[in-house]
Image 1 (cartoon, one colour):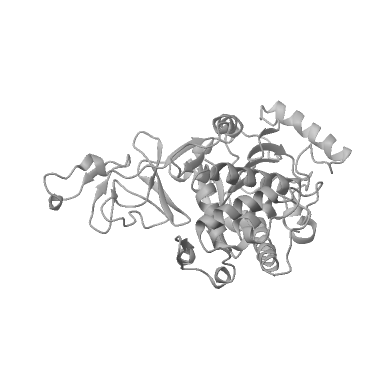
Image 2 (spheres, one colour):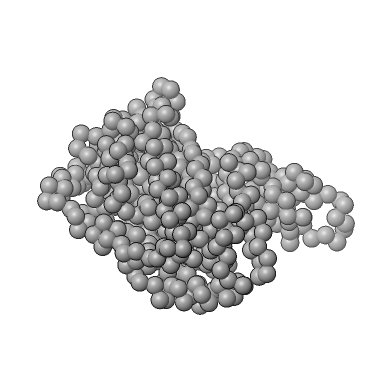
Length: 439
């Protein structure tokens, strides 16, 4: 799978390299400056309740602008703190040719750095995850501690070499409720992000994430623009025709404010709210603009978690949770994550762009840290629903991309009833791109 990352687009002002065949068919602009002007024009003139113009889904120059103005400037979800429980535990992630490592420090804090040696730029941590005493570059053995300080560069660098000025380049990192977010930009975006983090901390407290562990993960390569992946997630208009496994347990309504919500559904939510209150489980709908949202939703009556038959996924409940039929805490974080927190396991999703028409979707399942695989839980059972759903969505996204590539494509209307989540996402995307371009 890592070999696929070699297809990432690398675009300079006058040269385009390492591009896919589809990318080569969709180069529309003679330079990046022209593309920036066209991006502003396309977004300012777009019809708000319609899909985007074709180049925004397939042009490599506009993809580079997406990377620079969204993925290199906004807060991105990368993983969970329980993936790195002890000093020296780390995982790596690559964000459109920007390798990053996330590591647990000796003081318990989570640090993030550009995974690039300050000597000649080689990647330092080559594995997806691991444990180290110090961070040692495999090329010339320059050595850093988990705070990013350079400890060793060898006598070959000479007496005048300044060790202190050659530490690892830090990446901004924030954690809350067990979630890890990073920002590659020089400035922190989104002034209300800390308010979201405080609420996330409160709503995740019942799950005690520090006492969970990663049970299994998958990485799915999708031949579609990253926005199509997010758009697909932000509506369930397609669910009845595409996701039989998911709909064994999932209720299609987005939340209690969904215009499609029936009186029976609202009454069920009220009954569940009383159960949540009795267990002191936060459940009030919280939104922070279109970007961040938390909403607790019941699953279908008679089901417990998102397994194929709705039965338990693990013998061990999470944190202080007592009710197996707790439903799902749905957490949205744009531009790259949605999540489902349940009574005995939780599932997190991460979307990262590769090229104008390629995306990596990572799914991770977490259980109680004391749960024993094959005794308390079975990974195949945990994965079954979302493996099927992810692959179904991959096919939908890839066919969507192929259709958009057609010269006959033109933006089509969204349903304000079924696809309001997509409208919200594209409004957020359009506003952020334009704001960042104008800074």
